[in-house]
Length: 208
Image 1 (tube, rainbow, N blue to C red):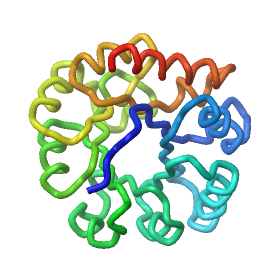
Image 2 (image 1 turned 135 degrees about the vertical axis):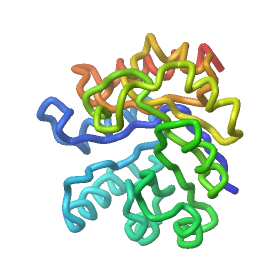
Image 3 (image 1 turned 30 degrees about the vertical axis):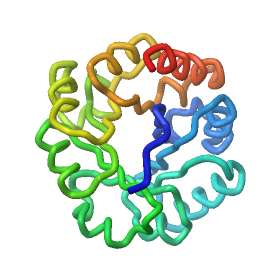
Image 4 (image 1 turned 90 degrees about the vertical axis):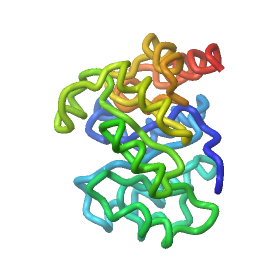
């Protein structure tokens, strides 16, 4: 099974870039040290998503790109992996479609979801929302640190905390058992993308 070798997971939302082109903002984050990016533009039609994926691969060839939900694109483009929702195709089915070198990530919203994801072959999970955040309110009330701690004890695969992530909260996420953090607006909306990225990486490094 391929290993997860990143601890900061940038999740995209082109509506949160303060009007700047998504590829440019992601490029600035990658140049500052982000290694893995989940392309999560769920409202884009497939051809537009394909075009954006190709742009990212062309501009940022060393980035580990994960496609949200679209297994066909992830496999066809040879991306680092695919990222599923709990309502996506079943993880065991997706695992049979991926190449052996590709990773399977899964978003979950409970301890039980994390346990099921590991059982079904996920390489890592993104658990949240830990704190309140507008982008995750559709998934219910914030889970809090206690749920993160319990989930970290219940599974052996890496857990990335998501929902209201800031550089100041990164330390408590890792101390609670998270392997890393998944970030949207804190980086995408930052006026200085590079500086904010470096702050997150420094916070992670301090707890490593």
